[in-house]
Amino acid sequence: MNDPFKQAAANRKVLTAGEDAAGRLDSFLTEALSGEFSRNRIKSLIEQGAVSINGKPVTEPKKKVQPGDHFEIDLPEPEDPEPKGEDIPLDVLYEDDHLIVLCKPAGLVVHPGAGNWTGTLVNALIHHCGNSLSGIGGVKRPGIVHRLDKETSGVMVVAKNDAAHRHLSDQFADHGRTGPLERAYRAVVWGRPRQLKGTIDAPLGRAGDRTKRAVKREDSDDAREAITHYEVVERYLEKPDGTSLASTVECHLETGRTHQIRVHMAHIGHPLIGDPEYGAAFRTKANLLPEAAKSVVNQFHRQALHAFMLQFEHPSTGETMHFEAPMPEDMEALVEALRGGAQRSP
Image 1: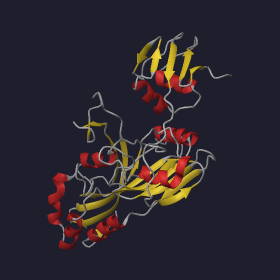
Image 2 (image 1 turned 180 degrees about the vertical axis):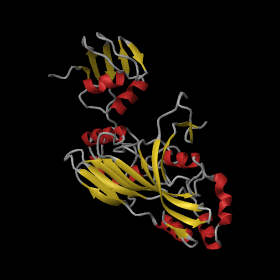
Image 3 (image 1 turned 45 degrees about the vertical axis):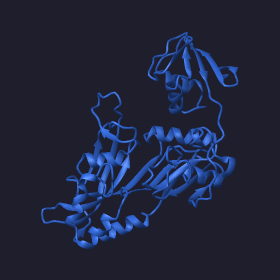
Image 4 (image 1 turned 120 degrees about the vertical axis):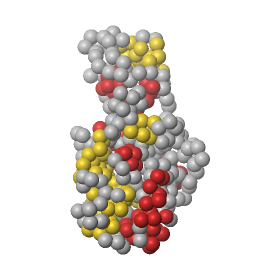
């Protein structure tokens, strides 16, 4: 069957819905485009006003499609990346013609933005990969299909062509529900969750500014589903009553929202050590630590979070790819300092 879209212009496609057309606008267009763009990309185009129905722009991805609807979709031309390549060392775990897997160090911003127009992972990738990076991510995020906070270290995958970008983006959008995608983190938190193993199901939304997030009521306008599975893997400075001053927690993401682990752990009363946004109220707990551990904790100025494992399906071969990276030196030093007191594994 031919592509139902007709090329009206180099950057526009038009379509008239058939008699059996139904469902959400973003789902309908994604299927009609036969996978040319991910559902997230289609949703973004709708929200940007690039889609019209019967001559009127629509910005609501959930809008229902009706038989006979006439669609016009403006597809922006891929833009050359504005950022310049910079010779920044990369810890490459794997690379082929389709993708590159690396371990991002703490302190490295993923993509250029306000206050960080140079010295980012994107700058390093442009230098390393040259012109092979995918353009779908946009002018400031070539090849980027997911990201880590500046002060979070760990494993990332980057697409090197548009087909890989679409395939990987779809996997992250699906959150591993129907495929092998899996993301796991190690976090060093204050205290010890009462349940050593559990699930945090708490929607997240904006917390009054552009970057900070907070747990929201499900009926809030900006509430987005957020689910984190956690397990305590090590306890430090444990007391006779079973409580601990700190713990290492392994977190597996069922969804991937901004600051998800940081907000969720703070929500249950165990923020990450060093977290300046969600754990500031716990800074004085360092005074309860032995002097050596107290010194290390007071000098740890980032959230103690490391994305140690990433698993996904290779976009070309279909092979399940599994990568792990050990905790960086600063987190290892933090853990060793905390182990200086009474400690046992659960």
